[in-house]
Image (cartoon, rainbow, N blue to C red; front, side, top):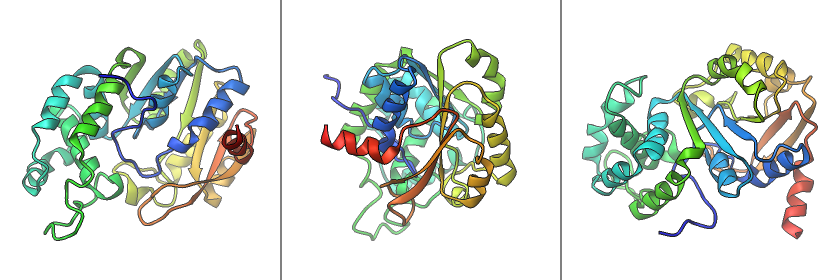
Length: 293
C-alpha cells in the first residue's frame, strides 16, 4: 500500500491548524530548528506533527492529550494499528452503536476499558458528531431524518488508509495521557537538554467550554501563560482573538493577528493570535510567498 503524498489526520477537530503547516516550516527553518523534537501538548488531531514528520522537517513528535478517548485513539494508531483497522471495518455506524458506546464518554480515564475499545470509541464519536466535537449529539439527529446521516463522515476505506499511513511512523511518535501544563512542568528539564520546539494550541478562551470535553477557565489560561513566558525552549502559541489573551501575552517577543479558514461550530474565517518567544516571520507575507513560489 503506497504512502500518500501528503498526510491528513483521521480526526476532525474544532479549529484544526492544518493551514499553519507551511508557516511553521518557515519558523523552524528561520530559527535553525529543523530536525527538532516537535511537541504538541494539546494534541487533538495532531495534524501538524503528522505532516511535518511526513515531509521530513522534524526528527520526532511528542503528543500529549487529556481527553481519554483521543489519547486512546492515538495510542492504538501507533501500537495496535492493524487491530484498530479490523475493528473499524467491522463496526456498524448506527444509532445502536451510538447508544452502546455512551459508556466510553462517561469516564475520565483511558484505562477504564480495554485500550482498543476506547480508541475505537474515540474515532467513532469524532467522526459521527457535529464538527468532531466529542460531546456533541449525533450527525443526522437522534431520529436520523436529516439528509446527512450518522455515517456521512465515516468513510472506512479512507480512514483506515490514513491510520495505516500514519502508523508507519510509530517509532517517531511518543503519546502521553496528561494535562498539558502538568506535562510541560514535569518535562521542562528534559526539554532543555534536547533540541525541542513547542507548538501550543490550547482550548479556546471564549468558546472552549462548548467545543471541548476538557477546557480551561481563566486561571488555567493564566497559569499556562506564566509558564510559557518563563520557558527558555522555543515555542509558538495560537489562540482565539480575545482581549484577555492579549493581556496575558503582552510581553511575548513575537505576536501577530492571523486569519485562518476552518469550521468552529457555525463559524468560519476565524481570527486568531500567534505568540512566541521567537521573533516570528509575518504570517500573511509567508502565505503570499508560498502562493507565488
